[in-house]
Image (tube, rainbow, N blue to C red; front, side, top):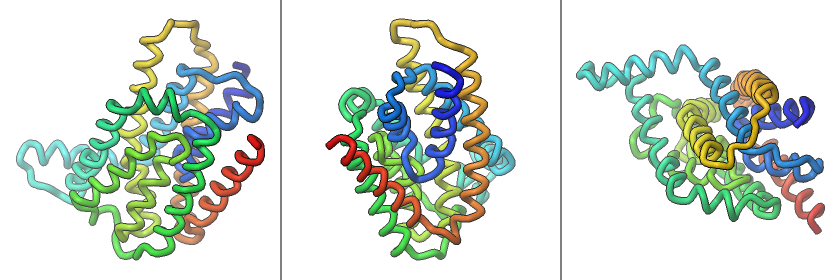
Length: 266
C-alpha cells in the first residue's frame, strides 16, 4: 500500500463511520472500483483505532462524566442522568456483541460484495429517510430509556451487514423513537465508542489468528492519524448542521451510489 491509498481509505473511513452512509460498504467499494488491492485486515484495524480515537477526543468531557457517574452507580451512589445514559450505552451495545460473535464470520465470508452493498445502501437509506421525515422531535439523549436503548442496540446489530451503516441504522431507530436529529446523532456517536472498539477487536483477533504476514507500520500509523482527524472533524460538522439539513441528503447519496454500483456491474 502506498501513502495515497492509505490517506484516501483513512479519509473514507473517518467520514463514513460517522456519516450515515456505511463505512464497511465504502471500504469495499472504493478499492474495488479504483482497481486497488484489498487493504487487508491490519489496515482495517488501524483506521478503526483512528475513528475510535476521534470520537473519544470529541466527547471526552461527556464520556468522562458518564464514566464517573456509571462507577458511582455501581458503588451505590444513585443513578444520575449521566449514569443512566452510560447504562443505556452499555445496554445498547449488547445486541451487536452477541450478533457479531454469532454471525460475524458468515457475514465476512458471504456478504462482502458490491451487489449486496448496493441493496443495503438503498434499502436502509429509504428507511432512514422515512424515520427522519415521520419521527417526532421532542426528546434528547438523556431521555433514552432501557427499551429505547435495546431497540437502538438491535438496530445497531443490523450494521454488521456491509452497506447498512452503524450510524445510519442507530439514527434511524432513534428518530423513529422521537429523538431530535442532533440527539439521535449524539447517542449514535456515544454508542459508537464500544461498537467501534468491538469491531476493531474482532478484526485484530482475525489478524492475529491469520498467517502473520508483514505489517507496514508506517502506513498503519498514517491510517490511524488521518482517520482520527477526519472522524473528529466529521462529528463536529455533522452536529452543527444536522438539524438544518436532516437526513435526506444522505439518503439521496446512498441511492445514487447504489444506482452507480448496479450500472457498473451491469
